[in-house]
Image 1: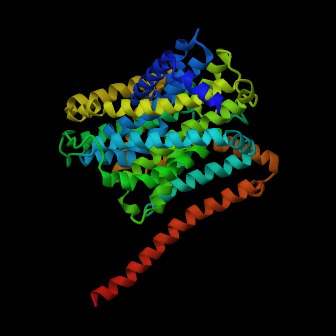
Image 2: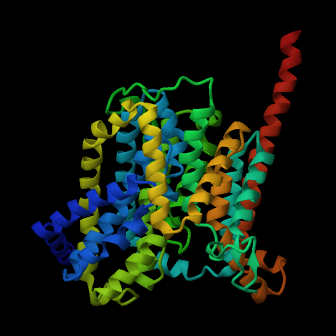
Length: 501
């Protein structure tokens, strides 16, 4: 108990509180700007940590990390432009809430959902860090193949009523993911002689293109819509009724994000999409999701915040990055003299408990900061389209250029924007494409490794109890929604003749 209190005292030192505030502010700004994201934010700001005490440097980087996840949903809610992949799910119901005149309520309740998700994950970190790290070690190539397939099946089932379009969208994403060099055979695929495509297509470029550029193009070409973005601002604070509807989804989604975040390679995108899909599946009115339902916003936000804490578990306990941002953080920690691994909790418990206490304080600071910024950020909605659209385009191109400093990414951005426009016009779901693009490369590599280990594809399904469970869940996630839809259609057909008589 004394070491926990010592960690709290260290976290409350003026210099560490100042670094917490600085990291939270910088992280929020980085999260709002399309294309940057927490990994880029930490990488760019690493020089700030030179000469710092290790614990202070860790506090600053962690604050930037989860601050960027907080901020990423701001642009998703306001202008339908995710800051990074983990903020994609916030566009599903967050942006419709903005169009319904509930921008302030959406941002304030998203901040509270992130706070609760983060706090639940911090408690999970305290009690489950070592057991979850040990569990993650059981994941080999076969387990990751089934995990990724389960994630894809969950997301495709969001397209109930458009299942075929959902699968087609997924296959498009998997196709884009194959661009580049196959690491096993070293054969170039679909690079068309362009050197910049050898390393593949950055999914962040595609996400920004589909959402930001696609949104601008849709509004420019959609003559049926009034050329204005002056949505009603509404209240800056959510109602009691919205809070009652949000509490259960927040509590359910936090553990989902924490557990998935602790699995190396899963990240906030999978966690938030899992949480959204689970919440939609549990709803009695799933057809209302995607139209501005508050439960559809708070569920992924809670999971996204919790996944950030979960991702620190393999990073600190096994020196295995849980996400792209923690991979950058891992390198930075080693540079400043912190050696992550199993002995960190024994050799430097003061550092660990200071970090945990700082995350408690940091999440509270972030909520206060984000809610204080609601009024300022909502002024974006009063910006005329002729000003707002060029700003969105400018931020998108700047964000994409900072990813790889390549002009080829500009062409990919524009192509992705046209794809986003066509998918929206033709009513194709975008999420299966995005997730397939994100996990496609890892799915292929893990599948190839598992084939070498188990000699044949069917052996993957029976590699371990984990693969068996994930295989069963994958089948159920596909069969259950389809069968439910079939029974509903059958019931409607029976009711229609009786009503006509």
